[in-house]
Image 1 (cartoon, rainbow, N blue to C red):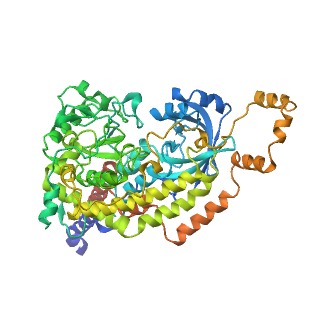
Image 2: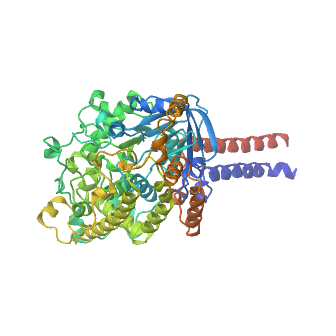
Image 3: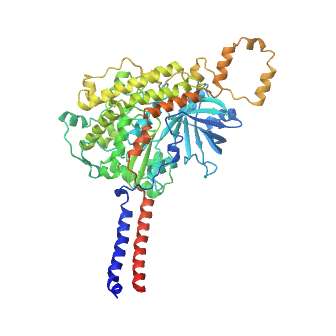
Length: 635
């Protein structure tokens, strides 16, 4: 009888428990329970930056493949990465003008793209679908791409992962490359979850590109920010605020190929659509965007992006249509490294545009001509002091809508300055940069010394990487001066006065490698020998000529022969060097900036995860109610 009297209370308690469980599931992340992670296994395997990885490409007719590389057609091969072999994968040469440049140099050191899933969708390397192998052309430092991606990742930008890899072909040493995560499906899943948005790679240069001219990272603690409302409450000096007001003029040092006319009084070589300028509502007006979509897009996707570009050009609803934090962080690092083979240069390419649920952001790509390499006529002092508030070459800020909104609104300009100050403080003033570049040099130097296909000599590498180090330190000093007002931060101001400029006359931009690097040949054309992949016919021909060449061969000393043999074989001593350097990095607690920064970022729940949690919670609630009703009926 007492049970009957309390049955309603029991049912209510059971229902309350079900409700509580539902609330807990729906708010698990706020209570410290991590959501499903999008982490990929390849992040900690192939892109472990504490060591040089090994990639062996196996192909029957490698020389035949090289002879047709400029066709950019896929061929079948097998690859072994750090001891793990994958067969039936696809490889092709990649690049724009770099393809023809390599060919014109009389050189076979092409960049490559490996598609693990090209023939079989089930094939991947630890979750990675596509891998780029960059040949490090026009970069005596071997580190421009690598360093920029590390900076981007360190500062919270969604950037490709990368690491150094020693390439061998059919077991013979080919050279040190930079392995880079392709910005495609695996990248999108890793950064945005399985329900990722739309990806575009705007480009109107066609075959001209590649350098040819015709957990969360919080805002600085002293700056309270409500990004959703686009408001910032902070006290900044009058000088700093004045710096943030945009002077829509071109920088003091403009590229020689600049074409006048167009929006803002100056026009670059890129079309309006790649500049992200709204023209009209016609799909055809944005062909250089839509034709270069990397995801499957619909007419609805096109219409949505055009509406976003229209609002962007009108500076409307910026806090809704732009991922403010992501884009400002992107431009902080981008404007630091002075890369004008990009969105802020005359070519207006080498970037990805990402859009999801009506919000846009930028993804970095291709920085081998950063640190002034595209501006081959610029002196180091002008490049080190390049104005951070007018960072466009081949046009003006007004002609780059994705950048203009930062300077059109003092609130966003202040945030840009605050993030720049944070970047300089965390990456440079802390000593982190010097430690990172020194350890990376120690890691890759032995491989470069024995790289048989390198574009420069080892001595040029040593000079180049030291120049890069000094450039970055001087650039950081100049940016600090521009932020505190002791150095002019706009091109107009710099034309009027160069007081306070950081003197960089002791270094030369060309030492790091530039777009016009001369007529390079394999090994820099300085006595280096490239490996030759011999066919059976070649071997027979060589054997047939042994007698007639006996006198010539006898002139080769045993030391020279030993040196050549070392060049065409995988260096046996490099494994020990690699292990020693890796151990040094671990002892000094030197971590991959991308991985360490991302580990600090809160995991976000993607849409599919959210609906799964809601569904599970509903099941718990319904189950609780059913149990209560059955129990009541039974009693």
